[in-house]
Length: 273
Image (cartoon, rainbow, N blue to C red; front, side):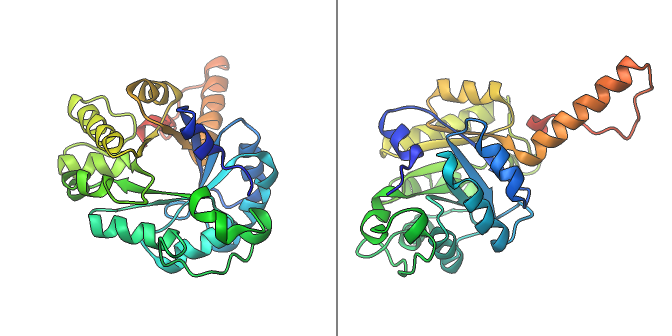
């Protein structure tokens, strides 16, 4: 079995650094995989990515040593099975709101006798291990996203689910869900109530021996999250990195050449998304 760097770092009590891939391109995936991340998550939920894109992106990052993860589009047995058969070593599932849904996520990700995953690791049998069936349950992981008021209310029930590896805070949706639209969605919230909510999810995960994961917009906030005790931090995605770097260059050029700032110039601060 190829090394799952994420699980190895968790065993050593080290923080995992992750980013998201939303651009459907093998070259950008390859570039991101060579920057020093521990893991990269192909965003099959909000990214502009189809299965053929996902498949070739997994191939692009295979030799980097980066752990490939997939955020699936939802709690769908067929989708989860297919991305794992393609070689994803971890699954992040959005909108897990109840213990029953968390149990179903584990079932979909694990082979019998733990779960109900169907056997057919078409690519994983070559890219991950020729002994895949016997090693996959222990060498892969699944994370439930906590991003609604309902999920927040059911924290203990979800976190205590056997076989679930951890809780992943979907900060943008959680901001909406806990504040009934009073706060706009954003990653690096500094409101005391949002920080308290994140720390409550962190505590619930650790109470039941699970990892706690946080989606961040900036390295500074991710570093703060690691100090709070989070085991896995995501810093933005390829789209925002590209937009931020390009926007900063354009803005700097206009400043240096005394050009007026265009009112249509975008705010490319990734923490605002």
